Figure 1: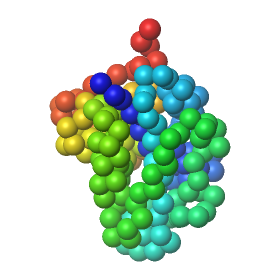
Figure 2: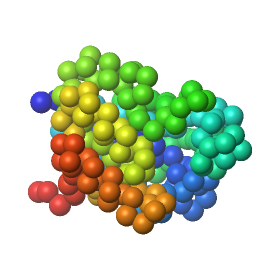
Figure 3: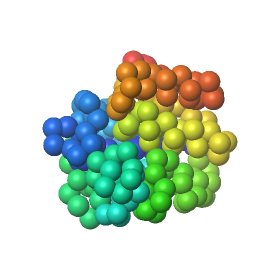
Length: 186
């Protein structure tokens, strides 16, 4: 079984202390992400980025729910500097269409096609945020027929409502994903 690692949206705007939409403790997963990216069990490593147009529909100023974040070409949209990009095979930009949320890395079909081309049958999904983009990416990976693991040692939740992250993980368990702390495996 060929496995890929999908690092979801580990970007400056999603990490404290200065991110426009900082996920609590989101910056604390950098070392774990780098350890996973270096793990030889992964045949391929993909990092996603929100890469929104300035008038994206998810922004408060345009009727959405979120403050402006990850506007393409800005410093906030760049991958966090603590992420070792030398270990990343592909950077996939998502959320580029102004009328879609862009929560899933599988939106648009590019990632699914790439993984099929590489004969990948399993993915580990990590990054930010557990209750939005990690949830939707893992959910869509399951729909694509992939074996899905979510490593909770390398994710963090927004938790707009307390417990949103745990509810997202429970949903993924129910759908058939393995939700585990891989840092505790020998």
